[in-house]
Image 1 (cartoon, rainbow, N blue to C red):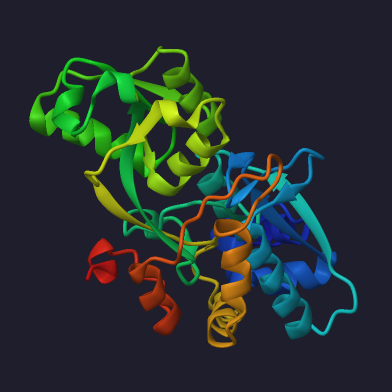
Image 2 (cartoon, one colour; image 1 turned 180 degrees about the horizontal axis):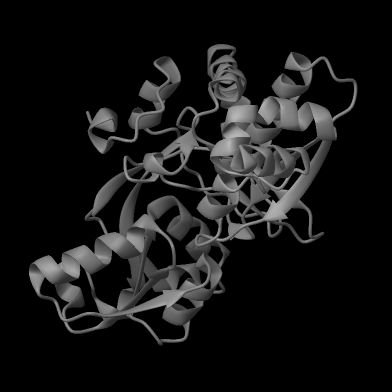
Length: 301
């Protein structure tokens, strides 16, 4: 009884998060506080990043704002404050799980392992794990990296995969970790690492934004398929239903086409680069038949 009283008091004081929050519901939390908190990345171009005016912009941010509108409509609220909370690869899952962030708007891979900690909404991009290196290094396959120093971003599926490949193939790699994608690419740029292992779309963005894009090449070999999804807390079906319906409506209405074109087929801030990346066949399938699957096989041909 005493334990129950303490828990009740903590809940009333707003000190319980995680499972207790999920039980209570994110929609109620948003309604009670009048605010929704979006987690964003600092350098995941073009998904979520700072532009030259230090404004948070990106493809995932545009999708999240459509979800915010859907939440606002669901709760019949005239006003809903949007709070922005920067996250890294290492902090994004804990901040979703403990209730600090309601939606994580970035470039996060949805996989079965992560689904044990968080939920994902409908996939909003399908990429692959590859590596970027300088053309002068003449590195074409993962076997060419044997005995060399490579880098990946901490807290990502990519660093886990390159560690696994290193062990399986006995490559003897020296694997460095960087705090974010910009730092990792800089390590290749300054020859502290010969290659940066990351999702290919992020590598294309970093190369296009670099001082000398022609100096770099991205591996043809894909190490894995990576479906991206916006994260939310687990065991909160009411909130997930609103979020998923907002994504489905974005696809069904065709609104996704203009949003995609804006970030992948037109010049984007801060330097007006154009990624010139048409919608992939894998993502076209998701748009036609929305899925939140964390199984890479679901995105195959």
